[in-house]
Amino acid sequence: MYKNKLLPYLLLLPALTVLILFLYYPQVEVFILSLHRVALLGVRKVFVGFANYQKIFSSPKYYHSLEITLIFVAAVVLIGLAISLGLAVLANQKIRGARFYRTALIWPYALSPAAAGTVWFFLFTPVAGLVNYVLDSTIGIRPDWFGDKILALALVTGAAIWKNLGYNVIFYLAALQNVPKELLEAAQVDGAGAFRRFWKVTFPLLGPTTFFLLTMNMIYAFFETFPIIDIMTRGGPGEATNTLIYNLYRDAFRFFKTGVASAQSVILFLFVLILTFLQFRTVERRVHYGA
Image 1 (cartoon, one colour):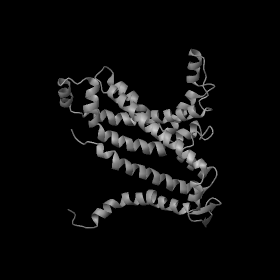
Image 2: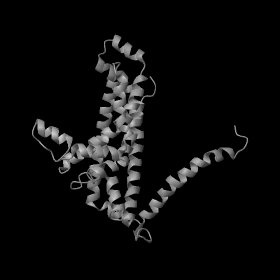
Image 3: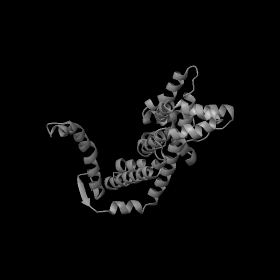
């Protein structure tokens, strides 16, 4: 199609330049740093091979952070998608004010993770938070949301789910509106109830959307929830919310363990890559495209 063989490469050059400068080059540099012990803010580097990786894999603290991360990610993805699907089904009903309700469901996604964390922090502050005021006025309790390990983890999980609800609802709404009405009417004629029509007809047709959201929510939970944790709990109490991405941040920018933090970055990247690969090899086979 192109008479000039160089033209396609020239058209791709801007995108390739951005990818090389801001994606591939930093990844290579991080891997190189992971093989060094870095001192004096990067001025001095000593090659140590895989010593940083050995240090990480021999640390009980790192395995605890991995356990917390897996619990956190599983809760954010599974609970978040379940709630989003339920809200999307409700928002898809033909009722008065449907546009207003849809907008209200979507708007939290417009907030940055830092803003979402700030909103939840002030709502659940034990001393002056609105939630504790209501609980104290009604049933006489004032939970210490940020001092209890289980409550703190549940709180940051809830904030992360709430922040991403709008994103999920948008895609589910679009998918629900594209479900062929003829199939639902045929199932209704055959005597299928509302729940059975949803489970046997609608939900399988939402497979591609659910698979896409499963992948995107997993990436979000691993990488994009750092501001929420930093503002709300800073990894506490007692390392209860110290996820892998937050542990990496602390080692890099608080304790200045650049080599160890770089190794953690490589490990986290490979871990998410493997999970995504397994997800494509297993879950995608059960996804049905088309009616």
